[in-house]
Length: 207
Image (cartoon, rainbow, N blue to C red; front, top):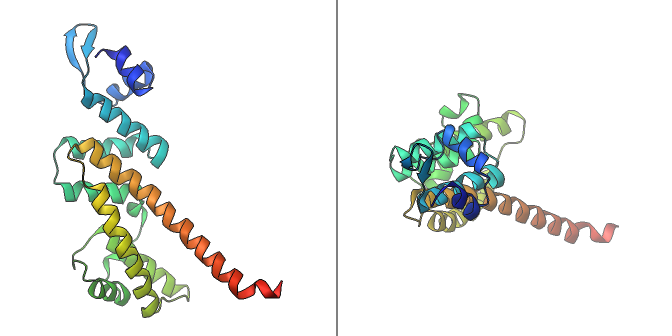
């Protein structure tokens, strides 16, 4: 297909497609002659991914370029998913070395849930957050960590199963990034509703 048809199929303007080509987000089409190129279904898939990362997840061009470069370089799937999680959940914005130091709560939750005892951006972020809560005088009790980790362990099982199924790397990133973003928001909304419901049960007679 040519640029016009690619634009029609994706709903993305020719100007935006040319911008993505210049920025290196979209691979060049197969040259037909000096002013014309042919594009494939892979270009459609890549454009759908770019639009979702921008409009749904809210990533900027630099963040998208970094993820797509990893994909195009053929990094292992685990490394790619870690990069998606780090970017989508903003784990790279921890901004402190505190997370490099293990915490009792972080180590305990890894053992109790039988999670792999390996370093990761997610574990660093958890350690940093637990340390911050302790410093603010709001330490997390072991039973609270156990209850929270049990709940999210079940959620994560479904998330990873669903988001890592696609073989196409564009669809893999799309499913993982959108899934992490929207499912994370879903968990927060469900938690808010549960908190409101418990508060209503406890205090509605005082109104």
